[in-house]
Length: 91
Ligand SMILES: [Zn+2]
Image 1 (cartoon, rainbow, N blue to C red):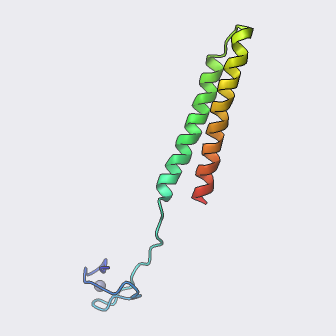
Image 2 (cartoon, helix red, strand yellow; image 1 turned 90 degrees about the vertical axis):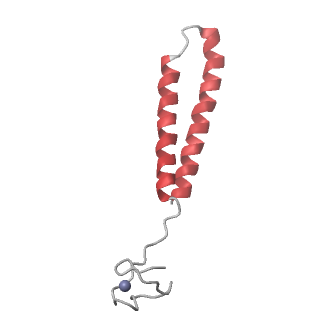
Image 3 (cartoon, protein in one colour; image 1 turned 120 degrees about the vertical axis):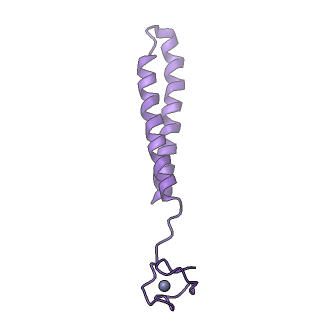
C-alpha cells in the first residue's frame, strides 16, 4: 500500500510510514456495507409499495378478493423475507 501523506510505498503491515513517519490509517474493510444498506432500503421501499398498491387495488368484488389476497400475501411475505435476509447479512 501507499502512504496517504507522502505517497511512498510502505509495508501493508506498517503502522507508521517509513518515509515520513506519519501514522498509517488502518481503515476497516467495509464489505459492501453501503450496498447492503441500499438493499435494505430498496426491500423496505418495495414492501411498502406492495402494501400500498395492494390496498389501492383491493377488489370490491368478493369472488376476486380471495385470489387477490392470496397473491398479495405472497408478495408481502417475499418482501418481508428479502428484508430479513438484507438486514441479516448487514449485521
Ligand atoms: Zn509517508
